[in-house]
Image (cartoon, rainbow, N blue to C red):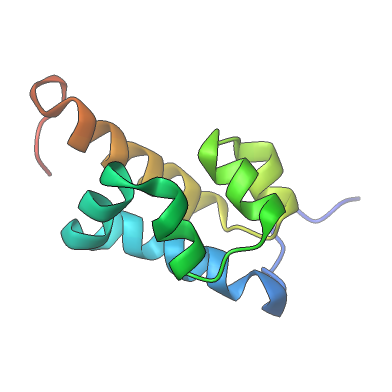
Amino acid sequence: MEPHYFFPPARAYPLNRFLFALKSDDAVRARYLGDPEATMREAGLDGEAIAALRDLDRDRLVACGAHPYLIFMAGLRLRMSREPTSFERF
């Protein structure tokens, strides 16, 4: 049986740290929305992670080692920032 959960590999630390920042840090999220490419490069993300994050492709991000919770929450916070009237604040 395949394990349901896996621990992210150490190589995915920059990606998970960036997803956490998108989820938690208003300033990082605002910079990302203004210039996503520069913000991802500043975070030290590699080409595959940048491509997956650009499309917010959950499966590709998981394959890059991203934690599924961080993918979900970063995506939710980005949508809340782009469309603030369509979500309740929590």
